[in-house]
Length: 269
Image 1 (cartoon, rainbow, N blue to C red):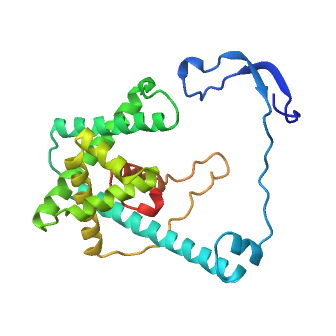
Image 2: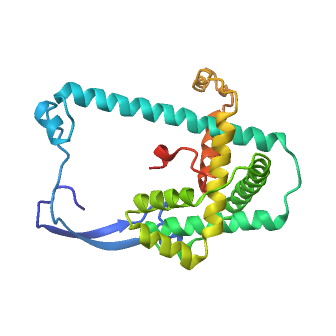
């Protein structure tokens, strides 16, 4: 409907909502829509010169800006590697320690994961009460919840054995970090935590983060080359060999973040 319109023009016509609609009951529905072009904007790529560098707050002109950006990218890559190493440590700990997890702990993690999904919907401007999960999605959440519960139990044991404690300064730093990430005042975040009675939960999350950091600092980290991309299907209809390493890493990163573990603060930001 928008193609060809100019600023201030309107147009009306039928549209069919796609199968990937956020609300399932609207999937495939045909409706009449009316659009109006309020403004037209375009991304313009500026010329890279000393004036642009100064405008963006870089010192030393183009050379200084280039060096600063390169440094940021290198730091990003290093943080990414460190984050993956922390997740790998967590995975190895869970795989190496088999023990029964009480259903209550798994249910608690399930509730936390579902609450986070609802919160994401709210941040996206959607009704959190409208969250509907299929049986497959619930099964996936259950698997993630069991991993999170097992990892949390292991980290608690390590923290107790190594006397890893959380000081008031650690809590203040985490509250300040949350406030910055949300664009809120520190006092507002403190009030929210107190209202929800979440101080102990926050303290537990910080202890888990500090424990992962201790494990990382005391682990033997071996860097390896990235795995090759999966081969293309062979001629004649043969299938490419199965390759799930990247999927597994991404899933573990997601679980770690859902646990509230800051395995890679810069990546999260």
